Length: 127
Image (cartoon, rainbow, N blue to C red; front, side, top):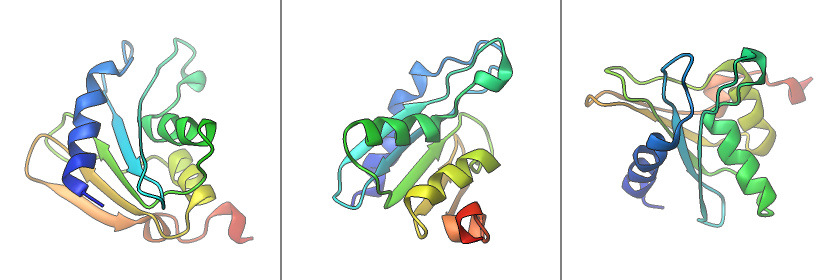
């Protein structure tokens, strides 16, 4: 699976982020186990609790298309340091994969490359 295509896809959809309140753009792209790609962006709401993250938007798009697996997920933020998924997204990702590769990229050369089980060693489903 081509990681560079995932990175380009995440950067490409970032322009669609709806983040008028925080001004913090987040975009995500991932491959499922079959190699299909899905993307998402953060969509904010004036009632902050209704905001949905890019990772969850991408996952919901995949589920809508009948896919319930995550192989490799890239998160892009136009920042100088990479941003990992929030706690809610970590739990959401773990629902669909216990070993997904998670790569966070930004506008510098910095990046993180880890797995969901390292980011969330004891997900809710483990209890």
